[in-house]
Image (cartoon, rainbow, N blue to C red; front, side, top):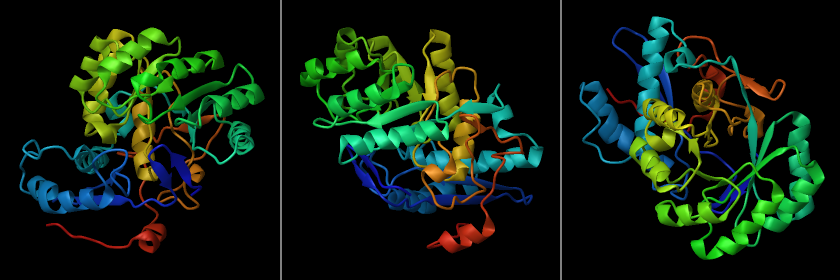
Length: 344
């Protein structure tokens, strides 16, 4: 994995919590928790998710109880939902995309590019991804590493390339005048410029900028999405099923945005092939009209946990097999597993 630098820090390795769920009838399903190693993007982190899965969520599932009384832990809950749903769909011979209401057999692939030490390095990275066939480029930005390097990227790739930026909440409303400089770069959108809870600030910024604002960290539920749209805080929504607690909630947010004519796209959290399969299936729904962070496996991993997802014509194929349509490669799973916890 190439180190990935954002305003939150640098990721050079990925701790992954993978859930294997086996039903009484023998049907199996797989889930992946997208929480990062440290609680920087959100309050959840991999070791904490492992703990809550082992001690709180899975015992409830195995006892036939609801998870509603467990507060928070959306990413861990999403992993449980994925595994249980995968098992059910495999048993029924139904693909996840079909179950969710997907309408595409392939989805456009975008790539997220981390910050670099120099502008030439950033331009070279972007050009390399375009040469691979990615149809949309997202560049991470923060104060002091934003307009100037992005202007160089735009000059290098030309006006027609779909280019957007992601600030991961690195700015404040006091930076509005500076953020308005992005208007000259012909961006598709600016993602999460201000802190997650600052809907008022995002609404004020949206009224000032020509560049559309997209929200990510601010949207943790259907209610959050409705509130943000009502406030005029964004005109585009990034949907991550792990962030909102699972695929069912992600579909509800998609449906809300579709009713309101709001474009959505599928965000990524450096998933293995398990999580990527779920994302690609989700992105096949009709309202996902913008390319998502749906990179090929080799963007993040020398060796993916599943058979790798490959970029073909700027797209990733939607798995058609039952459930997720993919399973871990046994030898890779064995080689990469650091610990196993059995919950009965």
